[in-house]
Length: 159
Image (cartoon, rainbow, N blue to C red; front, top):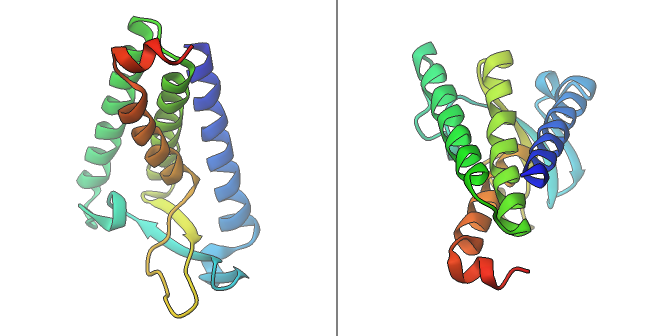
């Protein structure tokens, strides 16, 4: 449980610091785009009012609050589940990644009204139209980790 808390705090801090540096420090919110290592890594400002790829996005304020509540409920559920019984380090890390990422995006919705996405990865000849952030990566890795590493068979093999 302590490991999950450390990972949660680390992800939340890394997410918010990266957003502050890029969005406000580098003024990406005003510039719109910064080529870092084109075309592989670019900063492209996107204010996401929905979930992944803008799904469920809308300009209404009530949807913002629905998404905040959903993220907090899922985070609380994962946290309670982790706290109920001992889990492997991999499960605790996965839970921390998911909860830290979810809370990072909740902070954005509270502060900005939308999630600040800025990481864009493309390939030569293919421009990815979507941006994401550190929290999104953590949520994805955490969810995959929970699927892969939970269950009695996995706990027994995860010393």
